[in-house]
Image: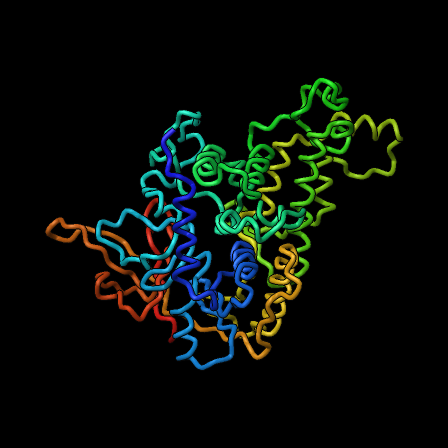
Amino acid sequence: MSEKPTSAWVAALRNTIENVWDHELIVIGLDIDSFASACILQKRYPTARVIGLYETEYIVQLVQCSQAEFQAMLRRALWVDQDVLGNFLCIGQHLTTGDCKEPIPGRNVNSFNPNVFFNQPYAYACRQNTEMQAITDATDLMAANMRSKYPYSTLVMLLHVYDTYWERNDNLDALIRHADSAAANMYQYSINCDVWRRLMFNDASQVSKLLLTTHSIYSHQWKPACDKNCTGCRIHMKRDCVCAHCSIGCASRLATRKAFQLHVECMVNLEKSMPRYFDCLSRKVDKKKKVVGSGEMRKILDSNVADDTETVEQEAKRARTSGTCKHQYVSMWIDLFGGYQGLKLGKCQGKLRPNFDTDKFLVALQAGYAFVATAFGIANPQVFATAFPHFVQCACTTTIFSSRNQAGHVVTKVASCDGSEKPLNEFITQDKIFSYAILSRAYIRYTIHGEITK
């Protein structure tokens, strides 16, 4: 098997954090991956503090200082779970290549991104499970056509590097499984997840073991892993159900069931910590669904809707015959819980709504961050300034696209939201922050967000 040694990417990421960054200032996004990534960095460097949130249309200033001072801090900070152009130091895992024929402005050479480190090309980056080859021990993991884009979170990389700074627990396991849809990706893109796990996390670290266990639970290949003495498997040998009834006497089913329950309960509790400002996007495109309570999810898991008219015998018969199979449950869970979870800004047409309550947003941020920090065992989570946040709007969202001119040459232009167009090299200056975001395989390749002040 040909592969780049695990130690190589670990050394590169350590260099970014330990030698280039000054261990003081952090900018994060608004999702759980960002919160948790900042927490593990604060476990390693307790004096580090989060100074801002970046969500591509706004930078939320969380420290009390002048505009000039804040801009200087942004240029010193480590941007975590971000991939930003220019000289900003970043750690991220978003896809940073597209099909533009002209070079996109570069990133800081000391930034780290696994897709960049392992030279993951765009051509192979957006494939479904059915478009990939199953791997074996002889598979060349360094071959780009054997992988799609990196499927895990920024958090997973940081936990692997700083393995001695945290300890597994039920809440943290659930957060890790959920950050950037790790568990959902294992269900939908199991081959790609297995490739990257073997390539980057194939050793004895805590997160390596958690990924291996999670893959066995959430993948389509899951079957109860019990010996011939398992009472539950002797009774339900041909079923992969993990309802309460079928799990009796089966350690494998009970363990899988517990993982589902802890995952759901953790997300429900997270929503409760950030009322009104918690956001959950369904994996179903263009649909949003409120996270249902753990009780409702357990009913789905058990297919056990209460009926006061049932006799004990009828209830037992229904429990034996109508349990939701494990695969049905995971599919329902993915539809309900979605990929993104974190804070949301109340916006309309790219701008904050006039009635947006910044004080309540800050309370939600504090509560959500404390929830995640507690899972890491941080006794005194960072307290954000009560006089803030201050919302700094970036320049209008623009889209980079490629087209042919009259001479037949491919030219990259920028289309602004006001309808104007200009060549890429006229738009880009060093005064702007640019965030990569591949939005569509068909026609939109990059979204660029401009100046940090307006």
